[in-house]
Amino acid sequence: MPGFPEVPGANGAGVLSIALIGPDQERRKAVAGALAGCQGVLIREFSSYPAGLVDLTQMMEQHYDVIMVDLDSEPKRALQVVESICNDGSRIVMAFSAQADRELVVRCMHAGAREFLALPLAAADMADALARVTVRRPGAGPANSTAGKLFVFLGAKGGCGVTTVASNFAVSLAQESGRKTLLIDLGLPLGDVAIHLGIVADHSTDNAFRDSSRLDASFLSSLLVTHSSGLSVLAAPGDFPQTEASVETVDKLLAVARQNFDYVVVDAGSRLDLKDSALFDASAAFYLIVQVGVSELRNANRMISRFFAARDCELQIVLNRYAPRALPFDEQHIARALTRPAQWRIPNDVSIARHTRNTDTPLALNDSPLSIAIRQMAREACGLPEKLEKKKGFSLFGRAL
Ligand SMILES: Nc1ncnc2c1ncn2[C@@H]1O[C@H](COP(=O)(O)OP(=O)(O)OP(=O)(O)O)[C@@H](O)[C@H]1O
Ligand SMILES: [Mg+2]
Image 1: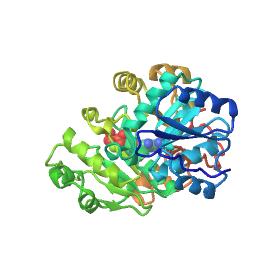
Image 2 (image 1 turned 90 degrees about the vertical axis):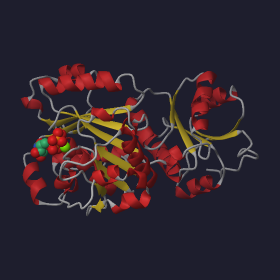
Image 3 (image 1 turned 45 degrees about the vertical axis):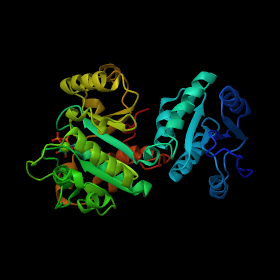
């Protein structure tokens, strides 16, 4: 792969410099054609993905405002390229594909791509997409492009397993990605993330909300406990809190958290009262935890229709305690009730209660079917390929096919 020479005058001259990476000539030309209809862009085409870290590093040394990557030629490789470039934080990555594959879109957004361009693409649509990324261009405004990714776990009903799934997901995410990960327990008034993880927390979200004017990186870090997995945790208060969380204080907490962590996972319980806060930011990835029962599916249907149908955000549905043989409904009924198919299935794990109370090793760190399913969720969330693990007898769980 050739180096990525600097495009003269691209930076700071009101011109957007674009590297277009696509092994497939036809798709590359389709994108270049749409770009040609836009003003103020300089395009450099590359006919192969960077061969390795060295090529990529070489590329990062050069200046490009936007890097467009073809996802279809080699999706796994393309996603790695997207993620590696996004990790640097100084460039905008847009991905393009001729396949309307929802899973690929989700994975590419998790890898950090700012826009997904579905081919064929008109010049006007390309111009709109460029206008959006220009607003979010590093240095063009608030540091949104470097904000940590937000993962919000919500329950269709109390007790459906939000804390179990969110806390094990956060541990897996910290371990698998090796990146700075924070778990915030907003399952107020008495969230129990700390109990699930077997940790003792001296401080909690209540401290953050009570003193929100002081909330900055160092105050936040003084409130955290580090779990043995490396995960940082902001626990919920162990008693009824003195201060109710307001939209403003939640916004501030999330802003500070996202500035200081690569990944922020929130156990939001069933807190729809925060729907106007940054918790429901369009850039967040939402996981709705549902158990298959009449009232749970009805609640889930209402939540999806009311809060997610009209929003341009990622929503993944997780069927928890999934036991296909014991279900009163078949898959089609479930998908109809949820208005869409579920993405994940977590088995009913009878050893979970004993395990949770007796050890500070979260299930995520062992090899139970529940752990394997949640680990798979976490790996996908941070753009890692699926790990081949022994799923003997449990192939029904994990990502739904
Ligand atoms: N997949 C599972 N298999 C077996 N037990 C589970 C599973 N998921 C959750 N549980 C159990 O169900 C109970 C409720 O789980 P959890 O506390 O995670 O739910 P929640 O939605 O956070 O509840 P709350 O509304 O009280 O916050 C716990 O005893 C937990 O151990
Ligand atoms: Mg809970």
